Length: 323
Image (tube, rainbow, N blue to C red; front, side):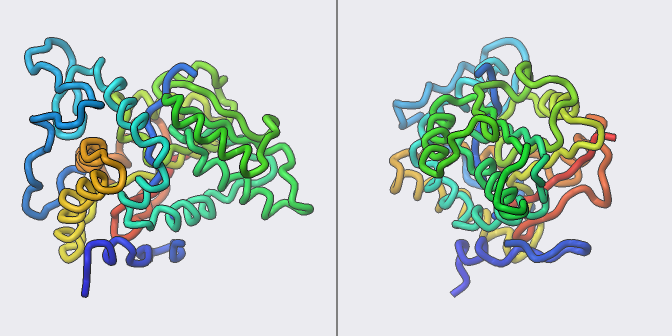
């Protein structure tokens, strides 16, 4: 039987000029340390009653000043960072499980493919933003060891920046478990994607943000900071849930997203609200062509169409270069 979870696990779509893919990293935008699918509209947001007392109550609609979205809710801009931080504080200890639920288990393949396309070397200076638990950072270090004679790391280094202390603590524990104790090659910082004050201008070769940029309040500021810290010729790479346009997969993915994922979040983590937010945040993120244009507006050079769809657009890799 064709099921939503089997549809998600369908091999990555082949695109012209790309190879078949083999891996969701959900974090948040970092501080001091799609459009809806074309299928019938999703059910109403599940926020009115705010059944989870661990989450802050919905803000008053009468609040004046600039607003933004938190899932499908409209909130004052200044509240989003706290609300998103609460979500990821809740899920930090079950992060791998959350990723498996959100992607049907395919996020591991996406991330493996992602690192192969980045192809870092023993000299690459890598900044991974919204990467607190180290999912991308450890793949970077493993890849460099695999391509360096003698299995060393050379002068390669990855700096992980995240807003959420709980996520960073998970990453630090994992680093110790994996034997990455040398700060020469790996560093964890608490910081804000919209203001990377700890990172000097033109200091990194590679900037990645995986499944994190959609949680940021001002995506344009995140991209501007990425441009600032990259060296000339440096690479921006964004891995993010995206917009599915396949007429067969779309309705199944919609059902899985709005019906199965929140229910599984409730079942396996006792946290329906956080998982419902994560689904809604995906739907609010710009579709591939729109986000590509945002990258170009930030000053990056985009080659070809500017992105690679994974699993029919369930996720996508966006690339830009600082020229």
